[in-house]
Length: 369
Image (cartoon, rainbow, N blue to C red; front, side, top):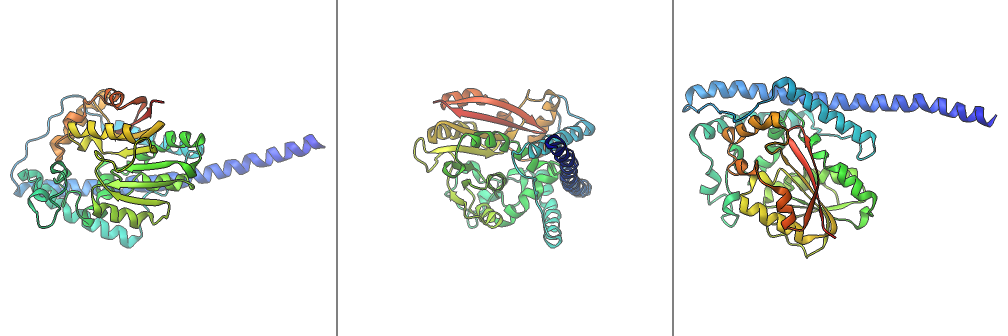
């Protein structure tokens, strides 16, 4: 009888688990598929707007790749693989089913309008080479900020230094990456989850460098409910938006430079950065790595999420070379060949893993014990 009872329980559990898995996968596919459709539509409309605007603007030289450029089919396949890996991580228990960028209809309409309103301004800056408006407008933007920081990165209005820019930034990035941005960031939560298996979340000191509007800090606090974290950024307007979006007592925020971290030696367990290093001058990159090595505890973890570099996925090398030609990214070309493994070694950090995730690279570093 015991064997029959056990068999009955097992037979009953299989369909329940199967239905739960099917429901979870269906929700995931619906959510991510709708995001891809939404941002792809905005990308297409933006492309058509830009093409019309170019008729009245100074001519811009066509960008020239210096290597292979993946086809749209290849890029779509890599996005599908990214989503498959993301869902597999959910099913493996690394983090819960994501709720990416859920906006009310009113918020979506407002953000969409702001996005299209900014398209002509971006086109104008690209055509005229205007990317120093933030630096030149001393009445609006703090002159105490580093010179390398006070620029119109990506030709975006206000650079990093207004709440209008902050509220629009994530939407703009998702248009660029077809809605895959959050899934790329979440790949860093997998090694984070593995680290936390051996450590008490409540005691882990976590800092997200250049946290922006909380792109990784927010998901990390959602994934790990006993974890507290500090978001650090140079932009007070972006931090204000991050505070609004997280509204979590386990999150705190600091305005500071990544190259001058306000933390004691050997005091932090986990540091992360997302899309930071390609926007830093080479000298500052080294200074930031040195600071990470200084503040991490022995055995501490640094989670690095940024653009692919040349050679990471050779079929994408030409596409990477187009990026600084299309956008104002003054430090991106030097980033593409930067030796981060050697930089880490100089800072006492050992590069452990480097994995591609669509157009990003996810790397982990451990401080030597």
